[in-house]
Amino acid sequence: MGLDVNTLAALWGAVILSGIYHGVNPGMGWPLAVSAGLMEGRHLALVKAIAALALGHLLAMLAILLPFSMMTTLIRWETELRIGAGAVVIAAGVYLLINRRHPRFLARVSPSRLALWSFLAAMAHGAGLMLVPIYLGICEADLTDAGHDAARDLMGQNITSAFLVALAHTLAMTVAGGAIAAAIYFYFGLKFLSKTWFNLDIVWAFSLIVVGAFGIYFAFHAH
Image (cartoon, rainbow, N blue to C red; front, top):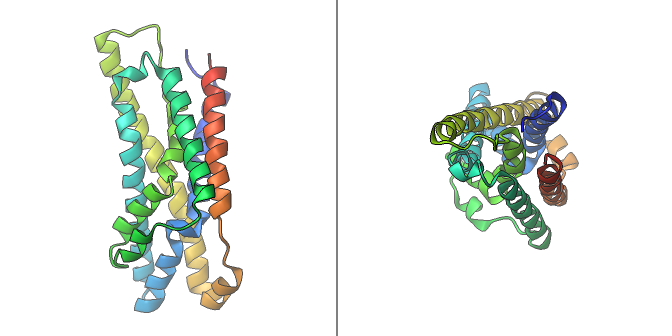
């Protein structure tokens, strides 16, 4: 069963919007980019920091999505996988609502290793999990053809889709987070940041629950 144009557009829109959302969230690291630029006193340091954060985030997205793309069982168990993925995302959101403490190991990562920090932060906050129900919707399988050749072709298509989803999401995150970091660095300064700091932990947790619920809904609705 193929996806209609509107559903496919909505899913790709969700990939982009989730990227923007992750970029705006301070928990994904843009304040560290501002700090790097100010401490070194060079514009290039800001750019390098944003690039490192983007690389780490991209690797985290791929670490979550690629295993799903290589599952041949996606052909026969597509609906069940989408429901299960939605349930896992909801569980992650509920856990983050209950456990509001930030992972302590992130504080132990050297500021010079921003790519590693970004990777670990994205994994710890469930950023990649948020993409799984959306990605599985984009990769909706054609269950009428489950031969070996079809399975191999489908797996190749899904791996390509995983890279495209991760790249589109990370690009949106980088633009959003980079824009905020640049605005703070060039125009507003740390004083503005200290007065307007916002915490998206609760919103983040609820957004995981919402995305998971939508994933389960579309898994049933598509069939």
